Amino acid sequence: MADHYNLYGLKHFAGIVADCMGIALPEGYAPSIGWISDILRERLGGTADRAVLYHADAVGQYILQQYTGLLAPVYKYTSMAVPFISTVESVTPVAHASMYTGLDPEGHGIKTYVRPQLTCDTLFDVWLRLGKKVAIVAQKDSTFLHIFAGRDLDYFEAENGIEVQEKSLELLESDKYDVVSIHTFEYDNAAHAYGPESKEALNAVSLEAEGFQRLAEAMERYRGKHRTLLTYSPDHGQHPTMDGHGQHGSKMIEDMNIVHFFGTIA
Ligand SMILES: [Zn+2]
Image 1 (cartoon, helix red, strand yellow):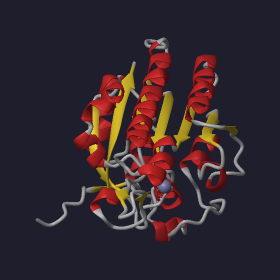
Image 2: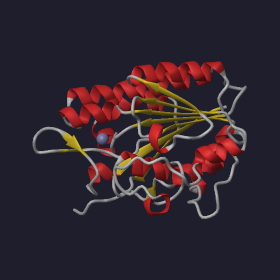
Image 3: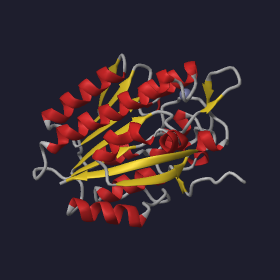
């Protein structure tokens, strides 16, 4: 049987988030997928004034298919799971540049594993022009800290996934940020080292899913005070290599098919 690639490209992520927040992306950027943001806005009872965007690196769709229960903490705080297809190449800077702009790789210019500071308009720039207070919290040397550098937002770098979650919790509990964008790659690291379905890698899926749950619980305390959009949004998957490691960047279905989760707290 032929590989079945998912339908929606990652470039729609920016449009979905923007539409949920009632803001517009620059001309020519990929629009929201209307039915998704319509449902989310209905559940929010208006536009989101908070967004908590969690990016667990490299968690592919087949991990969800084979180890579904590991994502229980994500299911608990989300209401929609939507299949997406990664970018070509299926690597972090290409994928996240598309997710935070609404452009194909040709449009934003990152087509392979390089990490220049993006000069085109990103969702971060759109938020900042509207006066939103924005933070990026990411593991040390995260792609986010390279390609989205140089903006008037708060950058926090932490040693590991747990420390990223701790810092993110602190920011959410401070109630000072409109948007917190979080990038951890504990699963990506473990899957590269030990294989995508190794015990170490699957433990990292849990660590990141439980981290998402902790952040959602923090926002639960603001139910009724804020309308919060939550997303759990990986960038690509990983496939096993012959020598017992994990890799990505190819057009293999394991690298390309991912699932995004969306939730609302209002
Ligand atoms: Zn990787």
